Image (cartoon, rainbow, N blue to C red):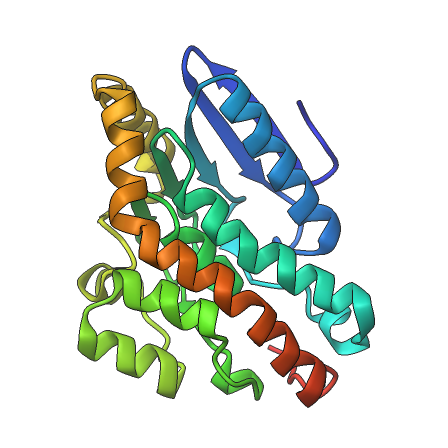
Length: 240
């Protein structure tokens, strides 16, 4: 299955979802729909998933052009993106995120919803930069950051929009490991192969048990975050 922005490939029980819009992998409404369809296909295939981006960028976050226009399209995009975190958190098989480079805002929250995150070395930035863009940190975003980051890094990421490089991102909790760029996909595929040995039913029930409160918090927070966005207006968002 291949769309304009997302490629889906299946090798045995391992599905690779590659996001590539030819630019910065901005999570537009069209791209988000394609990711959802790819996840549905992967679940139908009972596959372990690797989510990855394109050369030097995983995702720069939501499509700012859509946000700046505002209106229902922007709110629907936000809803789809925030809900995607819960979708990935509850996916019934292991999910590996292979981060090719830059990951910002919603791109970071998608990364952090995976079970295992592999970053790569290079001159890349990892940041939840909502405050730098002039936005209050959404509740969903804060929940995802708290889910993975150590307390001090969480505070700096949320309140100061700190930009992390690969090594500091690993120390903060964004990444589980860091490899050279050429090793990223081979490492992700090897790890996915090893995860096939897990009892998949036990994996599903265990991850959903320990994440139940987080998923409830995300689903409860989505309408509140959308209300905030509608009341404050999205057109004031600053360009990256």
